[in-house]
Image (tube, rainbow, N blue to C red; front, side, top):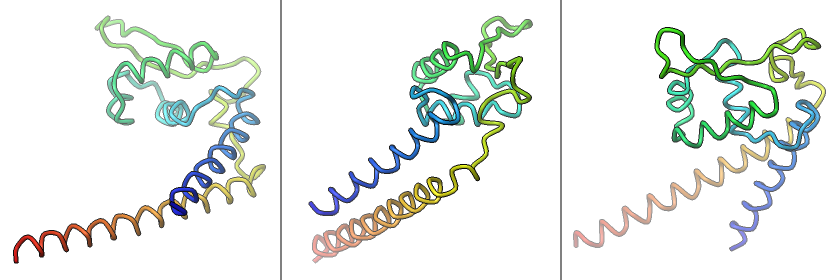
Length: 150
């Protein structure tokens, strides 16, 4: 039970740090980590909805919803392919007041070095906890199989 409580606290802390950074960088509290992953995919150029679905391992409806939210925030736009109208490209919106295509492109992690370091440490701890749990589960399975063979 203590492990579960520690895990919940680590996830809460990582979420708090993530929310703070996205609020500061994107001027919104509505940016989710999945939306940031979409931005990461299209930072170097437009991608189709199918490309995003595959890269993020999300369903079409989930990806479409995330893109819709980014559209409402005026971060991306959908563009139909001129040759094949069934294909939809997602591209970053060039803002007149930006020298970059998207807030994520100009993000300076140095401004949040302490918070980023804290988040990375939290994620490392989560990875360690997960690895320990997986090893314990694997050992338990081996023991069950050993007993079944006897």
